[in-house]
Amino acid sequence: MVESQKKAVRKGDLTEGGIVSKLTLFALPLIAGNIVNQLYNVADSVVVGNFVGSDALAAVGVCFSVMMCFNALFFGLSMGAGILIAQCFGAKRQKQLQDAINTSFTLTLILGATITVLGVLLSRGLLGLMQTPANIMDDSATYLSIIFFATIGNLIYNMGSGILRGMGDSRWPLIFLIFCSVMNVLLDLIFVIFLDMGVAGVAWATLLSQCASAVLVLLRIHFGGYAARIQFNHLGIQKDSLMHILRLGLPSGIQEMTFSVGMMVVQSFANGFGSNFIAANSIIMKVDGFAVMPMMGLGSAIATFVGQNMGAGKLERTRKGIRAATVMVTGLGLLMGILFLAFGHYLIRAFTSNAPVIEMAMKGLQFLAFVYTIMGIGSVVSGAMRGAGASIAPMVTSLCGLLIRIPVAYFAAVLPRNYMGLFVAMASAMAVNCILISIYYFKGNWRSKTVVHAEPQIE
Image (cartoon, rainbow, N blue to C red; front, side):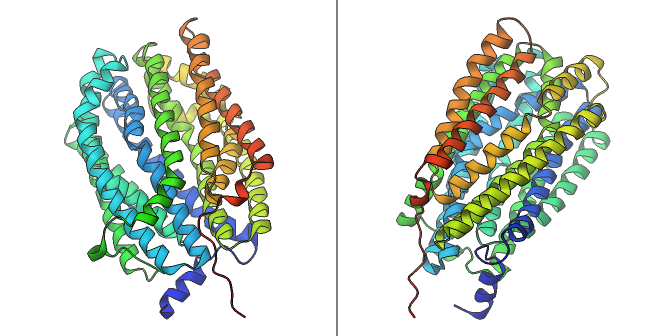
């Protein structure tokens, strides 16, 4: 291994040093990145809500579950690829690390092209099945058709970020995300305010920004002096790497796909309450993302931490890291709940001045304020289990939560015509997932699921 590669390995190594400090320093860019990513998503809604109208805001909001449904399988596989890379990195298996990176990028190109074609062809039909109101159908279809052409850029950025995180670098993905988020906001303002492009304008801004993020992350991987990089002249699917990625990522992909289908069902329930509630629900999903995204960042951080340490055979260090992350996410959830209760009204008003929309959004946000602590604990423990290679357990517990959410939403919201039942259903699903994955952590056999192990040291 060349000297620059040795230096890169030492720099990104989470298997040595203080656990809390290492985990915190690695997690902070991920948390900041997720918050910036949420700002990225919020920008479209804020611009259309203030400069186009509440119907346009609803049109953008109703598209979210459709986009997630198409991208869900890939996000699961990219998570599996990142865990495999972290385990190879921690175990210091250089050839397996290189094969995993090349296979991951090839898989990204194939899935990106597939999602783009299917998304463009099927999006309007899915919007119809979801009972999207006629007054926002055309804008929703326009937004989706453009966004799906941005898929390949989005997937390359996410896979590239997973590759960098697996090798211990969470800083550069954040830098690229900040740059492209600023770019997205500026383009939103130019296309909507100055060029009067409406909903199509924010979609084009997203497309251009995501393509820019893809180019930047590829340049960093190639020229950053890491332990391995994408070998463009050796792209292809390496069977062993693919099998490991599927084993680690397919359960997460199935989980994400099923969750997204469930979200589409719940969205169809929400659509039945009219465009004002669709707009209010869209605002809640954007605002609560400022609580959800930091917790997901900690979940991603602990997955990499556990992956590297389990690959290195350090079980006790793994346990201590999981406990530390759980304490951190609990404190973060309580803090976000307090902030939402104190300042939620101001956040909601940033999206719209429509009084009925503001009232409905505030009621939902107040109900959910402290539920995110439960979700955060579930996210951290699930991330830890994925990092260890036990990816089936988080899939099963998440699906159990979904099986609770849909019927609760129907009986608590649809039948009595009470939109607050949708938030009761969301809280119920979070609680079920958190309880079940915590039981698995204490009782399950996750310690034996690691797919890559360190080579025996010769004295």
